[in-house]
Image (cartoon, rainbow, N blue to C red; front, side):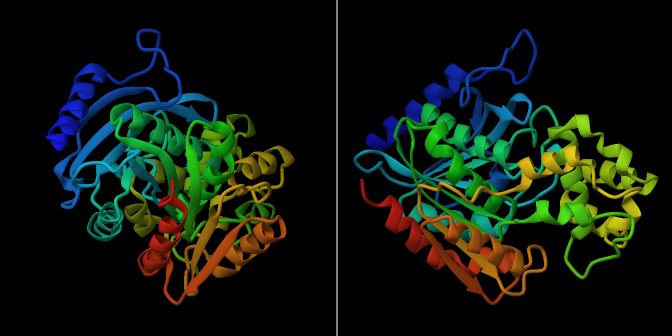
Length: 374
């Protein structure tokens, strides 16, 4: 009977908040976390172990003002515990910038078959954000850490509006782009959302220290022995163009570079990589990225805050990761430690994606430690 009441309550909220999604005077932006649309989650991204699953669209905050994000809620089976289900907000890795690449649209088997079921079996509700502009109006500001973090925070707010049985106790877990997002969230959320009790953050393969590499880039850069470098770099430039249009990113690009950016805006990252991997960063750049305004804008997007963290952090890094090389994460861990963060770091033998799987036992132990007490 209790389960029926829960599902009935969710469906009642669906009916009451269902509304067209859009922007403009007829549909002005609501406060962060206000829900504009709820619907059943597409079967292609269903999780067999979930007691219920919903897709939602909500207002959040992009780099230059209100933007919408889509997201998903997966509930554990059975009735909620006293105080509601604790929330694990999952911050996903790089999928691309085009709307059809959104995480709530395309199935990713590692997460649907392994990560999410493990979280649900532990009694945690999973709240997922696509991040602003990815599947919703506007351009996704890729690797703009502050707006990605706000997408997660506002996604938790939205989820608790739709499902009142969710606790205010939560943690954030992210891989790759989502690892960067998790660490930004850990720093921002306690002040941004004091009504929510953030307990900790897990980041695997978080891209870091990229802002320190930017001043070294110019037409001389050859192809690098890393994975998906050109697609990632082009995506960052698209994100920078969205976040700071005043720096005129296109003026730094060759015709080849402008073509690459156009391609990553319409293709998902795996497909884009197959088309551009033979193009070097140097071939994309007409001049060095040396302008102080551009570098300052890149730093505000990319630099993971290392000071004044108030919740426990966990970082998992793959030793053979060619997407986010281990030395970058070593520098990040050193900065966090020197700044006094409560930090646990574990190194795994595998590559970028393998670390998301190999770290799961340690991730679950961390989440139990920070979430299971009231």
